[in-house]
Length: 275
Image (cartoon, rainbow, N blue to C red; front, side, top):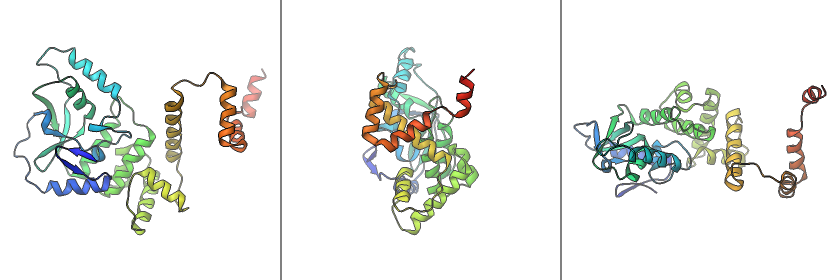
């Protein structure tokens, strides 16, 4: 479960949003200071961290946290600050919508006292869209899978136009339209809505009529690449023939033939190499 202070919220995005909306009915803070103690800043990665693989606190890139920590520790005491963390008021609490890695770095560097923040003003739906849009601009590029998940969350909210959803998440309007169709099917079936990947699996299993867009194709390729890197490391295997034979044994000759056909040079490329 995602933990904020001593309370817990649902694991699914839609459930967590409902939980936060209920909390939003509580008394709001009377002041919004420019600095907050670290302990006052709560996190809800299920809602505001659009990147996949988020761990405790919403961190997805430990090496980035380490780099920020080192930058903080290189500064003199009393001046150990990073860019402002963006927070959003829900009830009497402040939730991080952008800056999860900065928060983790502050804690790793054992920074004491308060840290600079900026407050986002708007509805909860607007805050979620803002979190997605800001993640497109940071130095850690979002993968296609992460952009699709961000768009899916905004589709579930149903508070934004197709164009706004596309702009905030970085996917095409065509993909957003396809997501809306998929979401309507899930609602008509009265099924629980989870991640976009889970929804696609449901659509494929039931052979539902969902358009397979270029963005979906790129996201699938992203997942394959991540799996290769996790299993074999960032470099290609040195024994190419043995690796190819292993792939053929694992996936079958038909699959291996399809891969070989795709990798083979085209007729135009053959003509160019003749010169």
